[in-house]
Length: 325
Image (cartoon, rainbow, N blue to C red):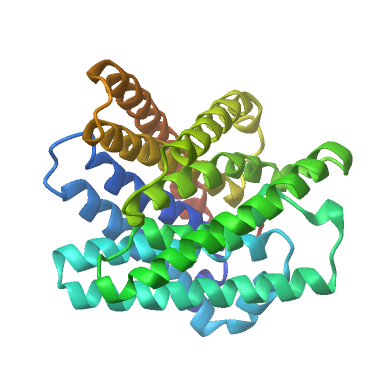
């Protein structure tokens, strides 16, 4: 039988993306039902367990983290560890004490920025257009999760604003390059194709972060980001007819967070519209779209979690798991 240390080596780094999806889903449901924070807490606890597994893996086997950061695909999903920690920090601040939440938030921000620098350095050293996959949005744009999970400390508000505009600026730069790559470069290989779902996340994440930390948001920017977010989510819904037929891989985790953050962004938009005098009919339409998206997100997250659980429980028992992308 393999030892615990050996089993930890097989924990796939993309599992951090699943932790992010689960924790975000629990939090998102609080906007749709009177759950009293129980969904947020359950999601945060589940995510924390997954993060502890990956954290132990990297502490005991740091060479695996170094190898992951150098990989053109896995290196781009490593920051989901920090993003999930940001969401967990929000629950920790509410259920334990605010100081714990703020500390975890700051640690997660520092981790994410470190991963971003490492990603840029590695990709600049060996850049090839065909290496680009939609997961490359995660290191530069994923930092906006810090805004969605912002602990509300006034002294940290300038940092939150800076992180928001950093992420949105990098998204604006990277988006046309990514579109060019998807059209004119080689087809994305099957193991990395699940990352196509990440195309739905940046606009929704930018919108959610913008509505969270900006005191007087621009209606024009809300409309622009909201339109892009809904369009990209719809495109990925259609893409799921093919993506879900791909052979199982840890990369399935890429299906989760983009669906959840879309629902969160629309829920925040509906809330903003309600407080700014929009008609009840218009608010109801946006809230209805958000409700549909959170239901779809719940199905997707549940499906991916079950696939992970079934595959890895079997693999760990057999001691036959190998490291996969």
